[in-house]
Image 1 (spheres, rainbow, N blue to C red):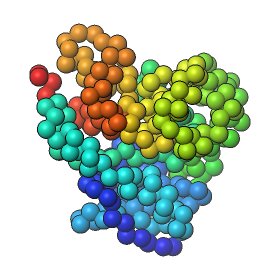
Image 2: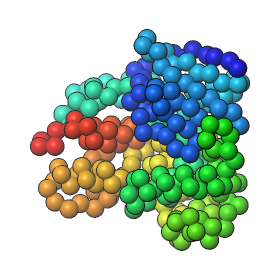
Image 3: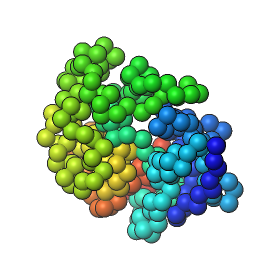
Length: 277
């Protein structure tokens, strides 16, 4: 067992970032983040001075968790860019330590995207957890390994339909996992990733945003069509809105659109956005 003390680059809060991150592969309880990674259980917690202590069986486990928690991805430029923004500025100042907690495989991000389409968030998470716990090996502490491209590609669409995934989405998920090695997308530019995924039936901007933000660790592709952003925009405009209209909320933030999505959703849920403006 090894223990490593890591200094995050830029403002970072594990409590704010990991608050809602628990799933079939990891938990965040009483300030401790625990994840099943490559056959071992890795734990992390934050000291009052801001440092993150990681306990693992291997150096690889430490480095993998460093990436999942985005400890090296300083977002100070984003915070400076939006500090005086009338809409997002207050939330960015209050939640300045927020960063996305990534999933350990792109395949899990893709599964999350398909599960989350057009259904209530809690149901989507339960569906994702059911599939992972059925398909993936248990590791320890009730946690399971994250699904790989091969794991999901080996399934029949009918199996996924049996879990509760819509038939069309089940077929698209399996087809994509059988034709693309998803982990290779780490080496591909975001516009190319988006263009490739857009060609797949059943994948729209929101799903691509989930893959980019949580699976690839990219900040430049927003969660267009997110139901939380739809509710936010409806409240701002005082009328019914379509999912595609949320792109207008994110357009001003350019290369930070993905991170801006997170700050909008977190700020909206906490009442930090000036909705009357």
